[in-house]
Amino acid sequence: MKIVDAKVVVTSPGRNFVTLKITTDDGLTGLGDATLNGRELSVVSYLRDHVAPLLIGLDPHRIEDIWQSLYCGAYWRRGPVTMAAIAAVDVALWDIKAKAAGLPLYQLLGGASRERVGTYGHASGRDLPELFDSIREKLERGYPAIRVQTGVPGLKTVYGVGGSAAGAGADGDAAPAYPRPVVEDWDTDAYLRHLPSVFEAVRSEFGAELPLLHDAHHRLTPIQAARLGKDLEPYRLFWLEDCTPAENQEALRLVRRHTTTPLAIGEVFNTVYDYQALVTEQLIDYVRSAVTHFGGVSPLRKLFDFAAQYQIKSAIHGPEDISPVGMAAAVHLDLAVHNFGIQEYSGHTPLTERVFPHAYTFTDGHLHPGEAPGIGVELDEELAAAHPYEPAYLPVNRLQDGTVHDW
Ligand code: GCO
Ligand code: MG
Image 1: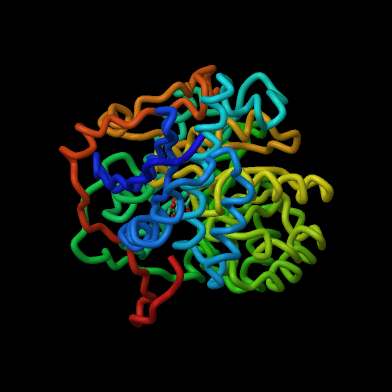
Image 2: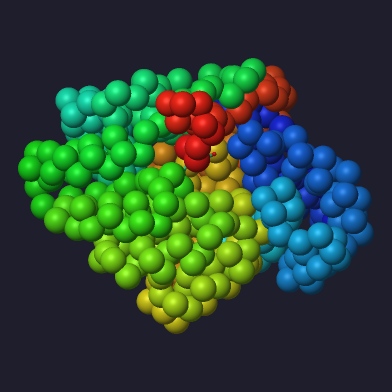
């Protein structure tokens, strides 16, 4: 079998998605997600101009060899643009291999290790009543675990919190296009003072058993994160996510020394090297990379196997900016690996679901990849073309004196 075509489709059925479609001389097709939120067209060029021409004529079954030749052959390694492009190729080739075998991808990854895949959903509110309503709505949809994000008194907008412009574009349901990044405001001390009281209120309203998560979005220094971890210990979080800027693995040593709150990190990581010290020194409890930004199913599987030796679990990044193609690949992997932890799942707009009809299902808060051969996702190219690319950016965050801060 040979690859005869590799084309890139950009579509915006509510938000931008970048999809690679590989076709073989047998007429089999495979899809891969290469969406990099806010920097989409850089990956489009990487794929169209530098990767697609190299794929023509290759045997699509040689996934590892093609992966290594794209990774090592470019010389310029790592980084989100490169790794999103390689991820799309990797997933499209797995899709083709599984279709050729007539099996859903999870069967090629070792078969099901569980019956279904547990998820967490996002709840948020500017104040407690809004937050409680949001949690109730997620519980009604069956989510077994809930990520809790909250407004902070004195701040106008907080990323990912219901009602904020940026939240609507990033973690919320509607997805407006932004010609310029929205500017949000931030005050770490106000946040650190406020957050424990929010978890106290949530625990007393919803009880001790509900698994609760929180995303600190890389905003804290190591000592602030250590303090927050300690302050949240009474509320028994499932995890505290991205507490410090992810580039600095050493920061997690200090945080870990001071708190037993479980730690999750990795959504901006793109290779195993970003995790090296975090895993071998057991500084975290969950690895949170996306199939889409980590070079695909092949390297993520290797990461999970590495992490398993240290009793660290998987938690694949699954926001709305991962397309249904990337989500499907994640759910196959979730079903297959032994050290599965949890899957983030926000779902997509109805229009997005129509552009990418898929076999995976979400029932009672749990995902299943379905039994269609391959990853089980199609691309309606006509509908995709009717919703072309729209420039859109993630927000910029500033302290009250105007200093740029992590959001
Ligand atoms: C999460 C994330 C996302 C990111 C988004 C950026 O935990 O799901 O933090 O909401 O902010 O993927 O594009
Ligand atoms: Mg996050």
